[in-house]
Amino acid sequence: PQQDVTVNDSGSASEVQQAVNYLAATLQYNNLNNEEGFVELDADQDGKISLKDLQVAAATYSLTLDTDEMQKWHESVAKGGAHIAIEDWVREMEGANTKQVLQSRGVEAAPA
Image (tube, rainbow, N blue to C red):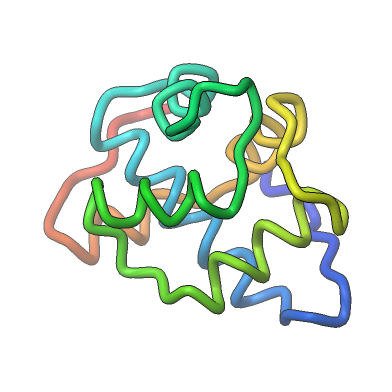
């Protein structure tokens, strides 16, 4: 079941959810579970996801998210802080809808 997205006044729910969906679809396409994805996207390997980590991941995985979308999602999940903890990351990824993102790229989503 898709979870509600809590958004501060820096971004709309649709922009934030789109970022979550793209990130989760990227993990799924690369055969990474949520925890493995967290480790993979933690570019500086400090055990948390910073905005810089997300920017590196966007370049590495050719994500179609603009900087503004990434920043809004990061601020939302990090609750205004500088980093996303693994627990918050997993909660967000579990609430993602990857099917539409993958299908829009001609990839059949694997059954959950």
